[in-house]
Image 1: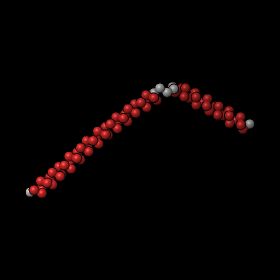
Image 2 (image 1 turned 180 degrees about the horizontal axis):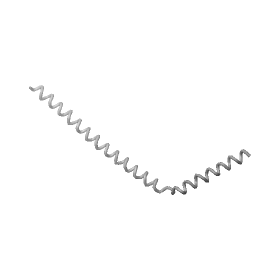
Image 3 (image 1 turned 60 degrees about the horizontal axis):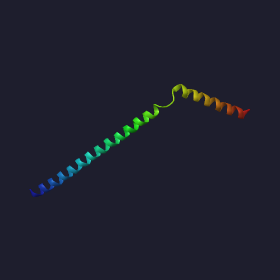
Image 4 (image 1 turned 90 degrees about the vertical axis):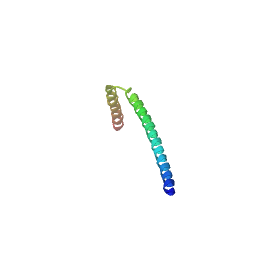
Length: 76
């Protein structure tokens, strides 16, 4: 009977340590996701202040034309 009580104390101690590590891990994960969510929000805010789509298309067309003129000028 004495041995079973000693094993019970050891097992209980192990269980309490596992529960504590699980709680610590859960807290750590919640903090990481909180940081990730803040980073995502900051990225969205940064991307929402970009140029309008028409300006992006205009710059793409103008850049392609300039590249074409440079290449065409070197060939001829």
